[in-house]
Length: 134
Image (cartoon, rainbow, N blue to C red; front, side, top):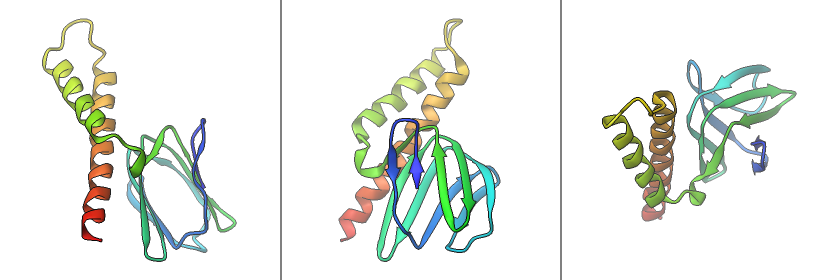
């Protein structure tokens, strides 16, 4: 189950999940040992039979307990929900703000916006490439 404060992004029985953890990518299979860890911004991949779902996440926590995986994400978007043009425009805006940084810029916020937009584009483009192969 992958949830944010606003909605359930994904809920199903799956074969595996690959998640961006704080120490690198985590591969989680059924009957995995219990654990809790922080989730880094990045691409989350959910595999079920021959399908793979890509989800852009911006952080949060992962819990595995009693053969159930729960991801509490700060924000998450399935690849098909991502507007690539909007995400690319956000990258340009963040890069411009960083290049022209003045005293009014919140550097940390601009860097987070840039990172989030780049992840969203990567996830959306991955889906587009997979669709072209089918």
